[in-house]
Length: 170
Image 1 (cartoon, rainbow, N blue to C red):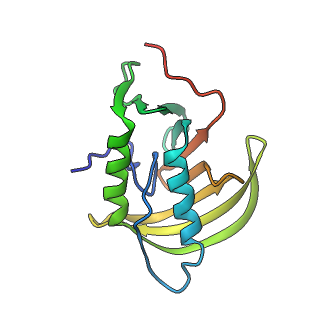
Image 2 (cartoon, rainbow, N blue to C red; image 1 turned 90 degrees about the horizontal axis):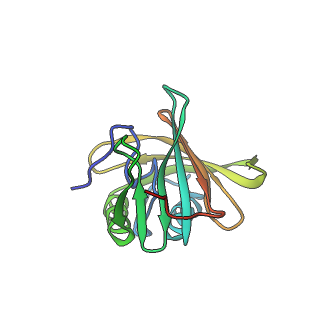
């Protein structure tokens, strides 16, 4: 069973992470025209060779590095003691696929263009419902390489970086 961190973000679902995401997802409603683009960006991000993921919770407004993915390993900084927890990337991808298979996307639409950290992105909004009843709305910012640059919900947002990523030093 997939365990979620107390942050309110899914470990590997529509609100994250993480990172992210699988291709076998149900799409509903006639207005779901941009859902395949959104799902492709999530999948591309999950499979990127390396990335850093930062979480900002709406309640605190403080940004925290939570995930570094390099090669076959994901380093997660969830424990609060500063020591990253290592997980095989394949395990995270399998968890993401399991969750995404039961997630329904709807009302997917492009909102326009914005620049994130100097990078031009297309902005999309969508609604999601998971099999365990979690539902909500999210926005994502997708660059020209179909990589997420930002992802936001009412609980906060995730920011992604792909340049000069290295494994954290212990």
